[in-house]
Structures are given as structure tokens and as C-alpha cells.
Length: 277
Image (cartoon, rainbow, N blue to C red; front, top):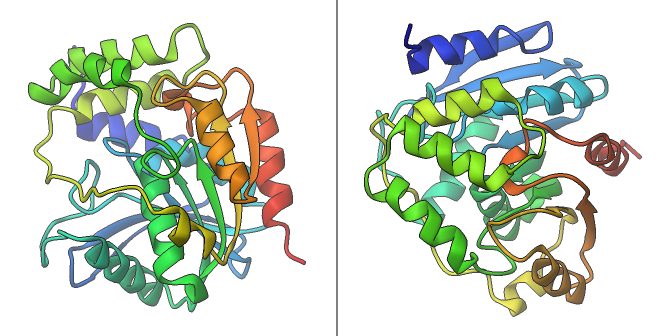
């Protein structure tokens, strides 16, 4: 029996740590769907998924951080999930910044820590550069378009999926990138089904310049998947280290095993980094 995206989303959401609150925040750029878990008055952290992924992929991270933090995972407006494009279109980096401002405002927060994976890492970094006073700390999980470009082989492999996205093509692409690495099957299924949903073109742009990155104010932790096929993690690390950013490699991880299958090493590093002082 075939499984719909909505059914797969509900099934994955049902496995989130208890209690998890589901809410919707109206913003000028559309209604934003959030999953919230953890200590009610704990330090807030906003989780941003990669392109083609949803808030549901963060369940392991939410369970780990929820012991000390209030975790809010969002579905990107215009991406798969349950956020709605019932506002102004997000067309520029400035629009993304204004959208996240509205999300924080809707949560009643003056600032929060940000954690983003892949494209979500790019969004988080751009926000931290534009709104440092609202970014307490920054965690980047194998971010793309931040410190180095994509590998040509990765883009070539992704091309058929991008030209005519189907669940089968996306599943095959994810299987290729993750290889034999451990990967959450339920998250992989949801991500594959998401490929057939209508979506808006994401905001992209050039990587931040070295000069711009040198002015990054929030404390930043960069965690790189050692087996990532999306980019050369060694090159990413070299460029980030030159900027004196704290960088660690995640053994056994690939780009698309994150954040659903987050190694214990990563959870420990993030928890320690975000520990209130």
C-alpha cells in the first residue's frame, strides 16, 4: 500500500519526544509550522532543516537538547512540510532575515541560538551575519554554500532528480550519498515523498565573502560529515579554520544522514557548546 507524504509526516511526528507542541505562526511571508519540545523556560534554539527536508528530521536533536533547552523546529516556508506560502514571497536574503525576525517575534523571543543543516545552515549563517544581536550562538551541520562549493559529482548525480523530481529518484540519490552509513529510514522515506510536492524555488546566492565571514560575531560551531559527498569536507574545514571557527568532523556521517542520524559525538559537542554559562 502506498504511503502519502501527509501520512508519513504524521507517522514521524508521532515518534517525536513527549511532549511536543505543534503550532503555527503567522508571518508576513507565510504561516510557519513549528514543532516545539523541551524545557518551557529553557534557552531557546531554532532548528532549520535542509532543502527538501522538514522539521520532523530533528527528532533526535530535539530529544537530546530538550533536557536543557526549548527547541523549536520549523518547516521552511516554500519547502515541504506544513508551513504555508500565504504571504509575501521570499525572494531575497533580506526576505529570509525578515521571515526569521517574524518567527522569533511570534515566539516572543528577542534572540535564540540557531542550528541549521545543509541549506538550513546557509540560512542560519546568513541570519547570524545580518542579525547578530538576535543570534545567541550558531551551530552549522555540514552547511552548503557557506565555506566551499558543491562537488561537481554530487551535482551531476542530483541532476535527474532536480530536472524531474520523483520519490524513486530522490530515494536512489539519498541511498547513493549515504552509502552504507546508518540513516533513519522514516526520515529518508519522508524526504523521498517530499520530492513530488509542489514547492517554491529556494533563495540562493553566492557564498559569504571572507571579509563578511571575518565579521561573524556569534560564537559558532561547525560540524562536518566526514563522508559527505556534497562537498569536500577537508576544504570546508580549512576555509573555516582560517577564520578561526571551531570545527569538528563527524565520523561515520554523510551529508544526508544528518540531522536525522546524529552521532553521539555530535550531540555531545552541541550540548556542550550550547550549555548555558
